[in-house]
Image (cartoon, helix red, strand yellow):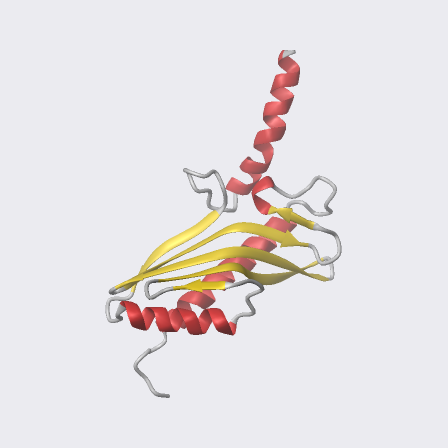
Length: 163
């Protein structure tokens, strides 16, 4: 009985341990979450909102955009990475909030679409039947961090320029 409990415990913790090596885990939810407050002292909340909205609409969002004057929520955003000759899709939820001189982004609810091999929730780890279980999360992580870098670069553009 004890050995069964230990096996179940280990098999439950392995996906979280594997993800914790690469992905930030929200302490409250136990799920993969990328979040940051980015200071942009020279910008008003409305300028940041406009810049973020331009960025979000320029990316091909697969889902609906919910917005108000101080937040933008995209139900399904995505980025891609190549793996085993296929373009894999990382779908996620993007939440952006704006205040004077700063904005906050939160990326969560990551789903990998293997482009023909099914979809899986990244919070649960890569399914055991997948080839290259170690490489796929690394590439997904790189794709997500590149998306974040692109978002930050877009938000850093001179918003007052008419060029």
